[in-house]
Image (cartoon, rainbow, N blue to C red; front, side, top):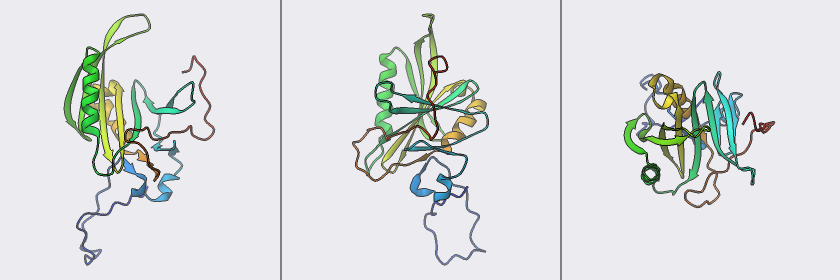
Length: 212
């Protein structure tokens, strides 16, 4: 895969022999940062505003609104861990993750849970512990990690669920899946925080109720 991201303070006079080895760029990426052939690679899955990379054993699920038929979120599932992806429009001049993060924390508190900020591979993230009711009516605490990445005119929000939310060895695969994401913002004007449009991949079929 070929990623091109111009190094800062690059000296045009530097010879190839003098140049230090270029470190691989770390995603998530904006679509303008990658070569077109990367977007069209066989292991890439085009979901509209998000292009994800297929990984061995990982299952792709899409959350679709039953009434509108619109895809609302992408869910990458591996064993007993999952990564939920949502992308939103953001201003040109500043990111919105710090503001969104405060709102998520306030909502967790309203639900009777807790929200703790910590520093991770993608910057400041939230660790949420909230009460959840299972189908049998039992209440238990669910832990999740919410990560935010501010890009050029977009915010990518990723929620790590399941074992990966509490065990570092399981989290590494989910974090790698997040690093491989490409966001296709497009040039059309959108309201801040409006969801970037997602779509079903070619040939996708909705699961029946039991499978869902």
